[in-house]
Image (cartoon, rainbow, N blue to C red; front, side, top):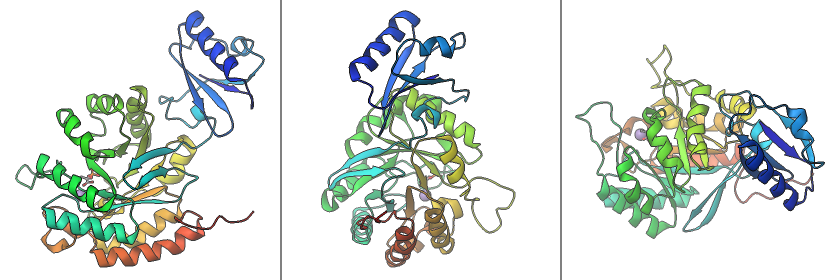
Length: 353
Ligand code: PEP
Ligand code: MN
C-alpha cells in the first residue's frame, strides 16, 4: 500500500504520520521523496487495512493506493509514476542513470585478460565517451573447461585501469565471499543472467551500498525479473538498474539470444527503475551490435553495456560479439545522432520548450 502526500506537505507531518503507522499499526513505512511529492510506502500486512480509514490519519494525505503487484518497491506505483535515479560516484564525478538524464555508456571486454589489454580497452572506451569500464574477473562460463576469469588479479588490474582513466568500474559478483574484495574496486556490482534468481546473493547485494546492475535471466519473465529486483530493494539497497541481455527463444541459428527491446516500454509501464540494454550478449555477434544499439536508444533505454576488445579474434571470452575500439568509436558517433534526437546525449544543449 502507498500513501501519496499532497505537494508541499510539511516534513514534520510526514514524519508524524510515519511514526503513527509504525507505532499503532505495526507497519514499516518507507519515505520516498520524489521530484515533486513525498510518498510513503507501507511494508507489512496491509491486507485488512481500509484505505479510507488510513486517509483520515492526516489532512495532508492525497490518496491511499493498494499495490497489488507481487513486487512493491520496484513498482511504478510505489513512486507515484516517477522514474527513479541511480547516482554512481566515479573518480571523474557522479554519473546518473535514469529517464531524465543523458544516456550512460558502459564498455569494455567480457573478461579482464591482462594489464595491457585492459588498459588499452579502458583508454579507448574513455576517449570515445564511455563513463564506465566493464570487465569480468569472475566469469560464469557454461563449460567448466572455459576460461573462468583471473579473479583477484583481475580486480587489481581493474583498479589500475580506474586509476589511469577515471572511469567507473562495473564487474560481476558470482560468490558473496568475493564481495569485500570486489567492492574495493567496483563502483557498480553486476549480477549476471545466471544468478538473477540466486536469492541469497540478491539479499547480500541488497544489504550493501554499491549500486547493482541486475541482468535478466535468460529464461526469466519480466515479472520474475522485477521480483528478483525486489529482493535487492527489500534488503535495503534502492540502487538497482535492470539490464536486458537477450532471452532464449526457439531460433538460435543466427543470433545467440533474442534481445527483447519490447522490455523497454514494458518496464517503463511497470517500474521506476532505470533500464540498461546489453546488445552484445543480446545478439552474440559484433556485426549485429550497432543496429540493436541504435534501436535500444530509439526505444528509450537509459544506458547501454557494450563489449569492446582491443583484439576480438584473440579474446578469451565472447570475442565474436566484441567490437574493436575503432568500430566502437564509429558507433559512438552514430549513437550521437539518435541520442540527440531522443534528447539523451551527454553534453547536449537543453531543448527549449
Ligand atoms: C557478461 O556480462 O559478461 C555476462 C556473462 O553476461 P550475462 O550474465 O548477461 O550472460
Ligand atoms: Mn561476455
